[in-house]
Image (cartoon, rainbow, N blue to C red):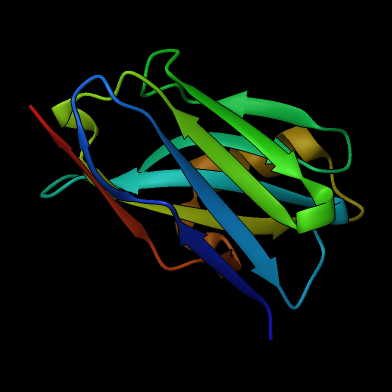
Length: 133
């Protein structure tokens, strides 16, 4: 079964850092776009960043204004989202999602994930990040 599992959320004080993990099972990351999203209470789903594992290109919507970095460890089949200098407004449920890039343009795939997240084929359960002031 194809699954993603996001983890690493928790309670952190403003100014702190967290590294979220997105682990895949049932498939390997060798030709996928993996994207991170978040949804704050009462707000719409928001794209953060994506990385495509075929070419290691990254695409950022940058809602954290330069305070986030996405990376991949192919040996662990895991994608990470490093977030620094967290602010209370970063409080949200964070999700990862995956879309195959096999026989597809990676830039188009990543862009489509942000424009049409409802069409993404694989979603992980979210992990809650709470930033206290």
